[in-house]
Image (cartoon, rainbow, N blue to C red; front, side, top):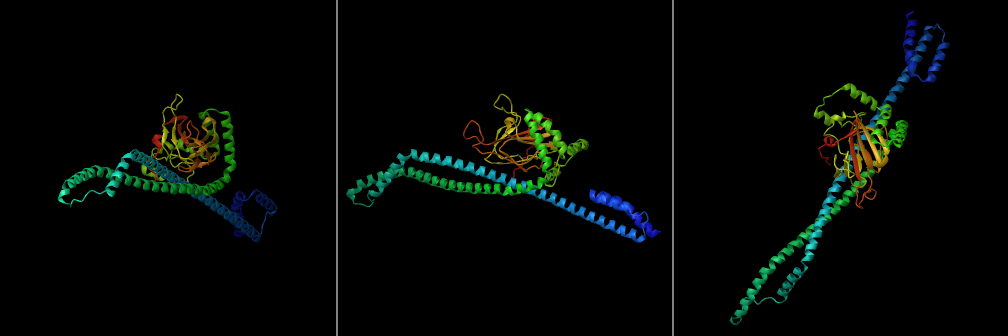
Length: 438
């Protein structure tokens, strides 16, 4: 009796697990086989059936474990690629800053060289007189001080003339020599800076090429969810064609992105979590995990921690005149040609396309009602629905020729706007005061 009941009990426990693990076709086959199984089994038949299900369950568990390992490997690879992207983008930004610094030095040295050449040119007559006096001294030297008595008067006169000429010409000659030496030193320094500029430009071009294979590999990793991203991109395009206001566009896209990505769950977590006190040292460490699938910190906790999206001077600040009778709702940063733009925060891409007079527009939802708007880029490198990390490359600026503007020397400009509950806010409190080193 006991030998007969144990297999049946085991079968009763295993059968539901098998039904949950097997595919639809396998489950149908097992159901059919169970229907044909006699209601009464001999101990040997029950043992064989038990072993059969046990082996199948072990196979399913093995496949499940293998699939889990594959998914873990994919997640690890994505995290590795993101970390590599952030590192390479940072190196590009550092090199861009070095190039800009050495270009400023070269410009200043060239201006100084031009001033010195102009000053020397204005003194050409003076230099000609000095050289003429020196030549005469060389061709007709004054009489020697040792002479006969009858030439004493000539000796005194020659000495007086020599002393006067020497005292007059020597300061002029010394200044000319010093100026020429300074001019030579300046020219040598300018040559060094120009060579440094060429080296840095070559390094910048190399780093820009290095990041492309990593970007391609990361896009390949995202193909598994590309269908969902394509749906979001289509919806975003449809909304942008029917809406003229940036605020309305954000409101329309909010629901779509929240439903199709982890943004919805994150928003619910923020609402249910309430105020969370985070220590300053913990905030600094929060951004070092490239495998995170949600923001490292609630956006309101990131003040003083966010990296600027681009290098360059600000040509317009928040609240300044926008040139059209209003005030600027964001900041405008003048960048280098083809400058790398990085995400200023963690968040989900809500929009990545052209929009009205903004040109190429990128909107990142950071959660908690915060949105970051970037505009003025030439190429966007991320897709709608994609989760990006602070410092991750997201776009490329245009060149000076395509920057537009009233002057021929107009440089590319990036517009950055922070919004809270659809209202623009000053982004200055959020920027990191630290300086990237490299």
